[in-house]
Length: 334
Image (cartoon, rainbow, N blue to C red):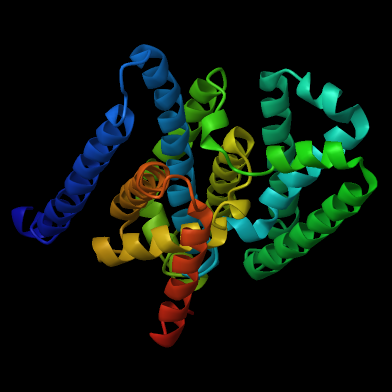
């Protein structure tokens, strides 16, 4: 038994050797961001606001990192990210439709919790219909599912643009404010619920990690090893849907922030490069920690060093484009 367990010992030590430094870096960067520039004002009030903002960043980071790794495993492609499935466009369409039907005053008067639950429910319902209907026809329809998600995204974006042209310019300003990611507006009353949902999904993904390793071998290899392929694919995509829906409803559509396609691409690429392993028990926590470090350090640089003179999303978009070209030139895209 000792000889059989020996090959796995280096992998466990390697995982700890990656996760521990990333966690330490996140702890230090979070402390620096929380306590920098407090001054002589009401420190308790400032720290409370920053703690809420930090909690939002952590929740979104975990959701983006884990959902990207899961989605790439199902798709069998290291370039695709959950943002192509149209969730962000659906969220923007929902905000525009509510402003168009209720007006700016009615939209502002909607209670945050019912609004959050409705947004998460609608986005998860779309995912259920999309994944359940298409994948229910056969386990080979993953490519068709992704293509359908892209088409839905284009449809939602077009409908949102149409509604945006029909509403009053002042109401359009409200829509713009509601569809741009802003961690400063993280609702303290929603954060515990969103963080709990995200934590449950991450925990389930970690429990599924050994089967996800088999899933990464592809359909034929996974089935030959006795994996219930279709059931695991639907369960994995369900986790992706919840993670993306929760993070989007909490702070807004990440595709307008980075975009999310590039942010998730960067996070997943760095995670694979650092972990040097296909084991999801390593990749999932590494991806979540990398995403959190990028958001916290990026926010600190954006606020304190650059003096909020540029948008963090511009930097991520530029870096993500370069990283995509790097993968293309290195032949890593498959």
